[in-house]
Length: 109
Image (cartoon, rainbow, N blue to C red; front, top):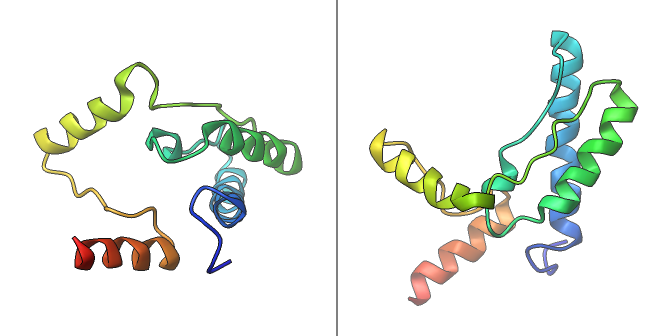
């Protein structure tokens, strides 16, 4: 998946891996729901994330909490809160491919 663009199949597989682990932990912990903050990013496909979460909900027997946190200025608000509370904000999505892409962008800027 190295040559797959961000936002495609590579990301969908990553979403599945992340959400699967979250569902496993929610099941093991006896939680009422599982969810993600991945939908805060304007670069993430919230519909696909929610589709994967819903499928895993059936697989693990834990309700999925659908979200699209970027709506209603959610992304802008997250930046404001991060600045206010001095929170670290990663400048790439999290996988090695996006990290390499971001580092290349910084070098070429």
